[in-house]
Length: 97
Image (tube, rainbow, N blue to C red; front, top):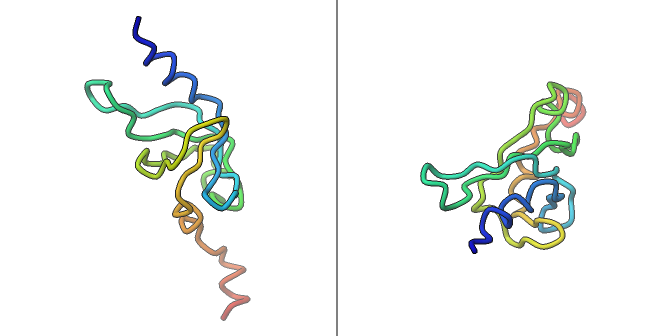
């Protein structure tokens, strides 16, 4: 019996954190390649509003490339690259200037 579908669906609902422990979001769905043999991305919802201000305001999720995944266990760890996605708010830019 092939356990792959069960393993893939078990990723849904897991929390995703960056390498340095920042909560990113929760897996809502998976992006698979055309033949369904590999996962190419994780569709995240319940996002960290500090990282994804625009997406959380609009109620949208984000897709994280699966190549960013470093470890899968009780939670999923990804590269901290996602923290750089966040753009400073206009107010913060004014404070910096």
